Image 1 (spheres, one colour):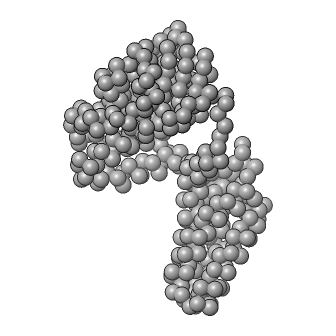
Image 2 (image 1 turned 135 degrees about the horizontal axis):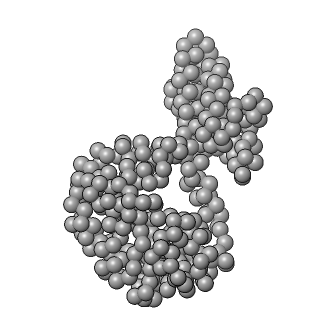
Length: 322
């Protein structure tokens, strides 16, 4: 048999995201659940929610829609996104396995395409998971449970997270758009490396830590500037924000104790960034006389991506590789 991942492999996009957008276009009032969905994703990032619990919060909106009707309507509009290369080689013995919800993919995969589907079991009435998210090793477990003695002739996926299944196949392929590359010949591009760095859980947490440091700097600089020179106020606010940013990074991302030695290394890594930002404040505040609220806000915004690069390289690089 041939086994295929679905999203970005057979289907050109992420079906769950596309479905959510489609539902919002049909019923815009369901945007009221967005704060709850964002809250669930935030708790997942901080390790409080499991991936299943996070996705349950995302799919809460399905409780308030006629699921079967809208799913059918959705595929009437989106079946055109099934990739042509797959349609040209589709076989009735194919198995499509995906982390996306079974209730969403079943009408298309089992009905329109006429092949077997293994996907995440989610109650279409409540959005609650029945079992585990069908991802990584769980895909292997689900496939072996359905076909105990199966032999995978060819496996196709867009993601290296499917290594467990790729290892079970006689031949495996990475799919990027319409291009299909043998798994062992696939080379991670510079763009893929950038995506892995900046579209990751750690980077989002880093942005949060940096954002909290920036907010601390912004607030304390404004408060201190009531009685002191604005430039001096910025230095003091910046010093306080350094400790806040270091503490959050150490605890949330690198899982290290807060110790003086590490804080010193963290501060040293900030020196080039500080010189750039302080020059920014000096020029735009003291020479050009811009509004101090605007200057502090712009300095903080500029500092966040620079801070990420410098801290990643100088302070936490070795720990990040573990």
